[in-house]
Length: 389
Image (cartoon, rainbow, N blue to C red; front, side, top):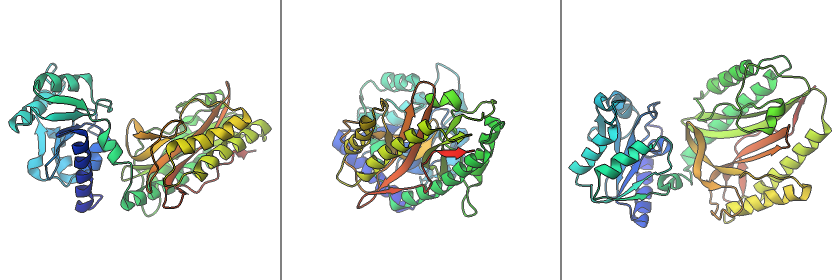
């Protein structure tokens, strides 16, 4: 286990209190990140049905996994043997059979089929088939959306979680330095990413890295005006910029960072735009403190952009922590105008400033922790446009 038994127990009690507040008697959590948060389970098994059942009065969750993955559940969780429930191979890709047929049977056997049941309706991997099996199989239950209940429970990190994110940040710094060293005219994008990935896995001499929940993003040239582009076999070109967005990972905790590299002679427009971008980021960071809201951070950020006449429609941040593919965001707090989520110590978010102008763009981002007095950056790495002449 990566955390003490006491910490897992406190997480469960926090979730159960939130369940009481929302009138949820049984929670079915399908979100891979939430499964890890509640039990410690960590395996690449999320491509097929798995979940955690949390009864409002239970001393432990129930971990529901494929029989083939039972060994991983025993190794990786703190859950007692009787609370690791497995389904047989007969439910794998034998439609209309589905693992949730067996889940429904378990719920009926425990006489939980008339309870108020909360579902993570917008969780990755919670398919329409999963929902239909529960809805049809439990006609007497009161089915409701749990409104990302466990995601919100994860918002404020423990000190142990913060330490894991600090380890991830050190790995992020190594990965970004490798990107700066590797990206050169004539080098293939895929070759550069190969070196970056190697660095992210090698980590430090004290702790290695893990796979990230998002691939290393590497828009180049005109691609810097687009979002979420990955490496190709094309070569880097003199005079073009490249945006690198990556994250080190430690014990599934992420600390993302984005920076921009320019190959060739200094470009005054790009340098000036990056300075404005950094000014906006810093303005948001400066108002990041307990008692302020996500909206306060966003307003400070956009005030700078408005001053320079720069338009940005997308949000500029979101909460982070545990991450599994396809996302390292927690799907709760947004750094966006109108989000009135109050910041508290150990809330962590990724604040992104990506500026796009038709056929070019620049980007910088920071992983940020709210402290007792203000903000702490997880990574210590210059945000300036990195010009490689």
